[in-house]
Length: 116
Image 1 (cartoon, rainbow, N blue to C red):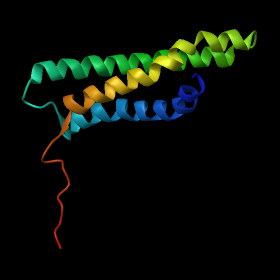
Image 2: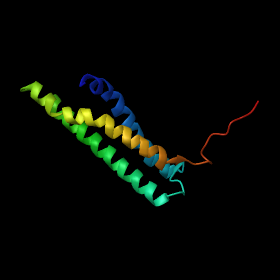
Image 3: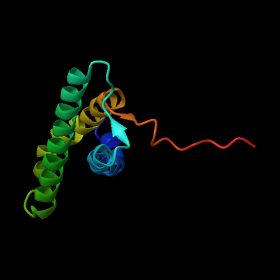
Image 4: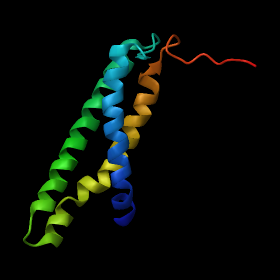
């Protein structure tokens, strides 16, 4: 049960950091926008999901770095971060689900498809 999240963790961290960088960049460049329909609710949910994903990512990286630096009793150190490792995939999944509905690509930013 513990091995699957541990194997997926590096990939999830990569995708989360990539998403945490692309959302503000896309909003500032006009590539992403919050849909007009339920704008206030989706904007608030997107902001909360972004903050939760950012906080969880920072907490996980700090906890893993503490374990890496702990030279005494490594087993108990790894077990202490078990909750972070097991909860992070769920946090990422919920945040991505909210991002799917909260942020849409702008029609102007979508690449034009050429027809032969």
